[in-house]
Length: 260
Image 1 (cartoon, rainbow, N blue to C red):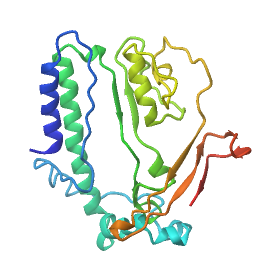
Image 2: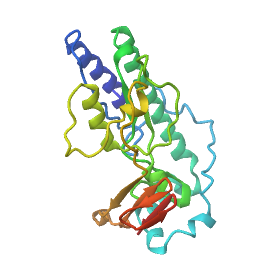
Image 3: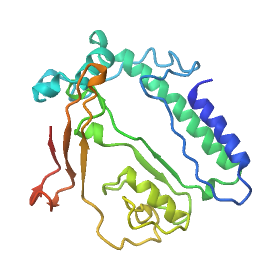
């Protein structure tokens, strides 16, 4: 059984075990579309006739702007040995999106379960990834970098309640550390002051008012070089902004400042 299908079945068992009227919190972690995963049997070859466009930054000119000591690192190796193996990106891209098909189907089954149990109108869904990924840009594949494709993630909050804001795209910077405070507030639990992150309810609940200015920058770092696999990952730290004053840096930062 494919992992995505197994997670849907596990969700069925979980929802069956929840007493009627009892609040619950369920977290699903999908292995697809990791390189170590495989497409579901019914999806294998489904996109065999498709050709995928290259990323606009997947070219030699842009790749040449990357610092030399980063160029020879693990992101570069993953691009050459996995993503662009033998000079073609289509086999990898097809395999990737065929794996995504099983994830989409599983999420659809979970939503159907909520509908069938009468829970859909009172269940908030947060859909996100733990990291982004380079997909050929700068001749990179993988995560671990300070560039936007690695830092940015899909982050969707679906609130079916009447006060839930619908079909909005927000510009605020949100982080995965915001999830725990959000869930606690939704559950009616006080958020500890020592907890990192902020509740996102003011961004998707029209009845909530923002009491203080939202963040417009965050710090990031990656220090593990991963030499155990034979290739290094350039260590980096920096700050990602939406045009603001950075107290620790004592001046204006545009959209991005990173240090390898």
